[in-house]
Length: 155
Image 1 (tube, rainbow, N blue to C red):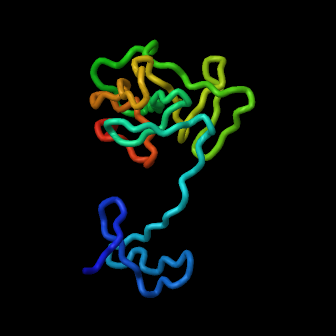
Image 2: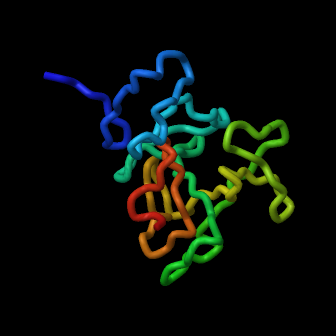
């Protein structure tokens, strides 16, 4: 039996001319794409991983699910009220790291992830809760460990 590795559900194949580190001579041939795996960018030390119904997600030190707010995405029916969300603020000594940044927002230093403001939902009471996720509103998106968008959040 021949075993092949897979990435995102697609089989991986070696290319015989790729013999050294970083070689990608087969990229683009017959519609094949090179897959380059590297370690994920680091997270701030207060970020934790929590299991949820949608997979492993990023949470704060208390286990509360983290959400990015993307106002450029289409809003759904029944937008949640601003008081449903709590900004994730940075402490004085905190510094940007990996995909995480810090901006001044409403007089406070607020964390961003990939340039989007980060919040928690006041309705999430237990680690892994997803009360901020609604498939009719793609503006609020969970931050998944995999880097993918959780099913039902976004288009």
